[in-house]
Length: 205
Image (spheres, rainbow, N blue to C red):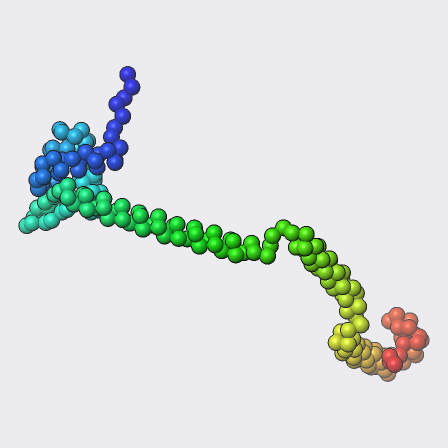
């Protein structure tokens, strides 16, 4: 035998609301916990949670008197709640329709001048050709970038720095050669051979 399917939360909520509407009375939680399982088939362990969900949704009123909580809900309240919900939904639908209409108008305006005509097609081809030409010219410009006066100026600055560095190292080599001559009485040829210094080693012009 298949197991009997339990009530969904929405079914429990509906049945609990029937308790209030049919009796038009005020209850304490303990009253609902007795009535709901017997008359509406709501599981005792879920009664409190179902009732609280109805209170949270403002479908059932709750008032604390002394140490006890009292619950009630009249059909008129439910009617007003449904009416407010309906008005809210109608307002949302109206706003959605306005947004839709506004978007449709925006699309229509955006399409003006973009109709698929021979003239537009020709202009689009011309635009693409100009874009291709620009890309080609940029590539050509990149080739001749080294002839740019600013680039040449930077190269000249770099050359000056490099030449100064070469001159410093040349000074150092001659200083070492001079020291070696005095210390060990070597001639230039022997020093050049020992240290791999070219015979024509000299300052750059």
